Length: 205
Image 1 (cartoon, rainbow, N blue to C red):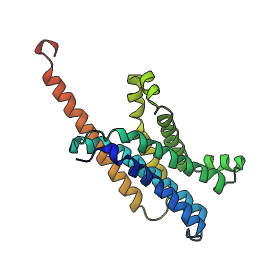
Image 2 (image 1 turned 135 degrees about the horizontal axis):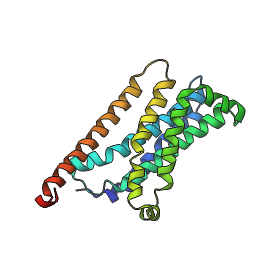
Image 3 (image 1 turned 120 degrees about the vertical axis):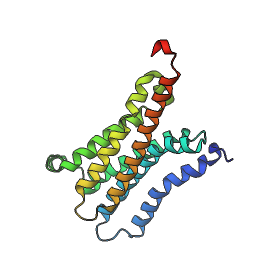
């Protein structure tokens, strides 16, 4: 069986391909009539896709028993942060030219942006607590903090839904994936609790 550390260079290159592809489309002027919006949307889409990949790691590892997969959760999480940050920068720089009064007005008048901000702040918190020494320092609190990734996914979906005025097929697709992955985690948690309870000595129940 292929070891996951053998796949790491290829996976790392693959994670950069969406950004390189976007840069190529910018250079070749392949982004259509509203290039700024296209850049904004593509970066946001890839941030959500990497977030779904992060959420899928535990279910996949549980089903396949392919150890070592969890080592890649950190890498995919960092790419979620990278694409989310570029999505935010596209909004601030390309959409609004860093004109802060206009940005502030837009945020106050556009409710969907609040969900985007909430999702980004959670992803930012998860990214800055990624280093192993921080994990060790935080102990059990690290796991509690990183459970907020589901709130980030929910807020990101709301952000996506709310700003669309037409076809909702794509956000519904991502929502279905996130519900399935969350459902799997809840079932796994319930199963582990039942097993732990059955294994307890009778006197401690």
